[in-house]
Length: 220
Ligand code: C5P
Image (cartoon, rainbow, N blue to C red; front, side, top):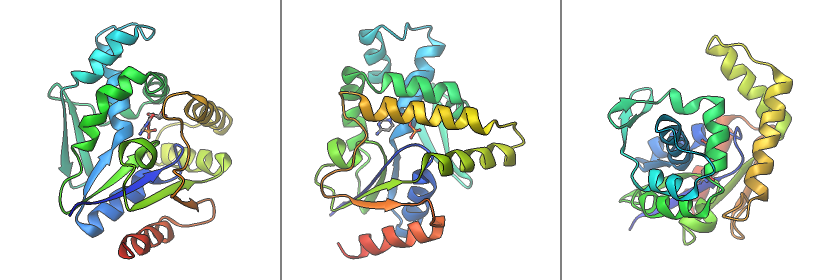
């Protein structure tokens, strides 16, 4: 049996870190579905595709030549053989990802690719619609949130630790804009599955969130 644990929520709630920790602890596979939308946005940018051209964007998504390579420090992401692990994390790529993610044919093109990650013994799936659309039958579903202020604070800290400058107000307004874009779209909007457990990480440490998810997984 393949157990699927879905963790959905807005950007910056800690999903990425928690998913990696839980996957490692349980020896499960990991799906970073946001990376697929980021890769679609980056590939479209590299190919000079018009972001209004729905058909062309869907074809970019369908033809993504991507490899996720497990590494000591996380996962190395390659697009057409080029290491784009850092490139896909740029702010503008995140905004473009959010734009292409609102296009239903793009989502359709990525659906099976995401489902293929569900392999024994299990999968931890990180995203916005893992519990609602991609893995609706998953036995463990978590919706992880945190206040926009707290998410902006964490992002500033992350950038500062990476030696980059960070403007809190700008980051907060970007986060709020992306939340709006993700929750108000018609296709697979960001929302908890009806059977998801809601977890607010604003006042929790990453270990506390991890332990809660492991508790849920143990009860399956
Ligand atoms: O999680 P991450 O910030 O990397 O995702 C980038 C963008 O991809 C999100 O803002 C969201 O619009 C989109 N996304 C999505 N569905 C998913 C994962 C990400 O629409 N399952």
